[in-house]
Amino acid sequence: MSSSLPPGLYIVATPIGNLGDLTPRAADILSRADVLAVEDSRVTAKLLRHIGVRRPMTPYHDHNADRVRPELIARMAGESVALVSDAGTPLISDPGYKLVRDARAAGLPVTTLPGPCAAIAALTLAGLPTDRFLFAGFLPSKAKARADAIAELAPIRATLIFYESGPRLAAALGALRDGLGDREAAVAREISKAFEETVTGRLSELANRYADAPTKGEIVIIVGPPGEAGPANTDDVDAALREALTRLPPAKAAGEVAKAFGVDRRELYARAMAMKDIK
Image (tube, rainbow, N blue to C red; front, side, top):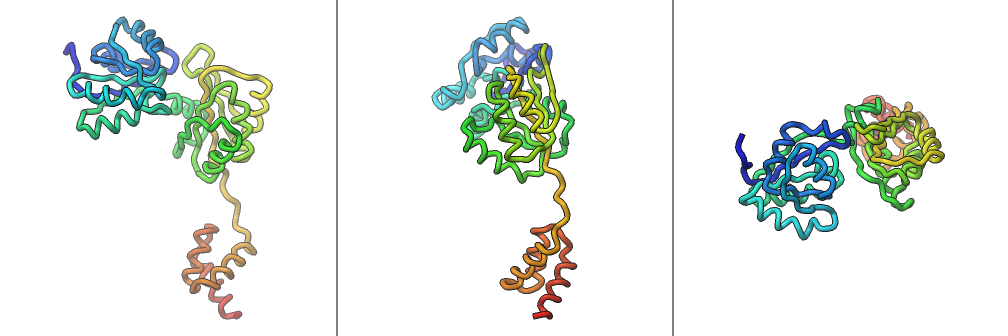
């Protein structure tokens, strides 16, 4: 095994709880990189002690990223830089993507080492649809901004994934219930740690549970997609078709309304022609 790594950026996923989840490849990169760009040196030092190595570290986080990033890019020309977060896969809810963007712009090699990710781990625990999902990060802390963010997500036909903190959990669940309806959901916390817990139920049930039992730890909320829309109301379809016929020829009016209501276009065209003849 070579004692040094080729220059460039290495994105290293680290455990979200159990240190045994660190992959052998990640341990190898961490032990040989010239410098580690870390979120918190105290957290990463604990991981390095676990694998029995010491490496130079430099802080890279939300508060210093703009200042530190040019220095790291310059170092990558001749050194190997390993990017790690406190837990999980870098770039998920942290400023790492800008480092990747600038490294690529500078023509530097970028290598990723896949591994733990709390969002994906929670999704596998929730028992909710996994064929389509959206990671939405942390919701805003202020009620109005949070409600606005949830309203934007409400029409999306996919399972939604959020990160949250213990003190804000009940409020977040209540806001999700109010903005999305009483969907199936799950709260996963302390994944892979000693007190791992996944609780499933309707958003209203989860909001009530955690309102009375505030919790701590790293938390992921999973919310199922909206239910299937019911059949279109015939009166509503006819009203929309009549309005469309005031602006469009029958074929285009039928197409517009068919798309809006999810009904058969040919059937609507026949109805549009009938309406036109009645006039």
